[in-house]
Image (cartoon, rainbow, N blue to C red; front, top):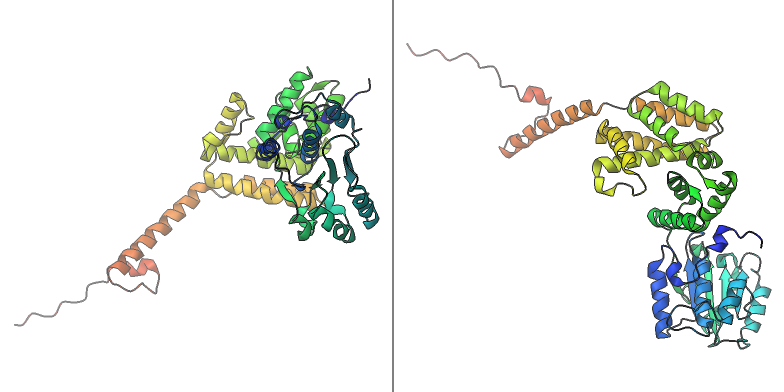
Length: 412
């Protein structure tokens, strides 16, 4: 049997198995249990988070011949054929390649025919926003009043590009990026089920690279396992992604915290010579600085993907910075991330950000100046309260009492 990629092998086969979309799957399960099926659905959201999978699960549940409750049985002929992609009553249409008015006219002709097996025919239109304006106009009437046996599911990553007349005819569900903790837990479960040896330190890098997409995470995992010879290693994964290894990122951040300009520039030089993506290094630096900020300001919000030893290491780094210093450095690298991506000289942009961070203003001096300003403002408020006019000259001069004049001569 040929190898099946992880994203296909681990595609959810029940609503309960869909990761990170519980409000949507719960609504659909309740609708199935109560037999309150809409004639048209719109699934919107970023790529790789479960839109098409959920559409297939809805079709599977509608056509399952042995369903007891909202979940499909997974064993009847209809369920098995849908998994294999041979169920004739589920028609998947790629909106990017079947986007013209002639394609929609063909669809309108076909919806009149009764389903071959079950109660429903389900049309899943993927990347629906790619349909032309004429195609949308041709679809409107059918979408609003389809035959009783037809259910439409439109999936899109760009709902704002679809006509309002189409959006208003659909029951809309907005899919969200999968939270990092759920994504990490899912990847760890799959790795254990696959009996793959893995380095736990690799999971955070994999999760951040996937940006909330389980499909992207599994595709990256497939590539990483091929690169690592069946093992997932943090350093190998970082090299594969063109990123800096976690230890190198921590060393770079450590140099910034210690005001070690030479060490920070040497870290950038090493990353550039090893062919690492400097934009990724900047992004990883932002994430590391954000963790320092969380541990300093709100320790209970510390990232769940850190080990106890890593948390202590980050806390030690955070203790060396005041909140003002940390905010200054973090803001600098957040701004630098966009510049590094756009600039023809990304290394220079990153080096500028590093030098600015090393030469950050002294928080103690800032706090001293603020304290003096607050003291002067308070004295001015007290003078205004006592009925005196606010001084027009320098505050210092107005607060110095006048020299006493000569006393008048006493009468002799």
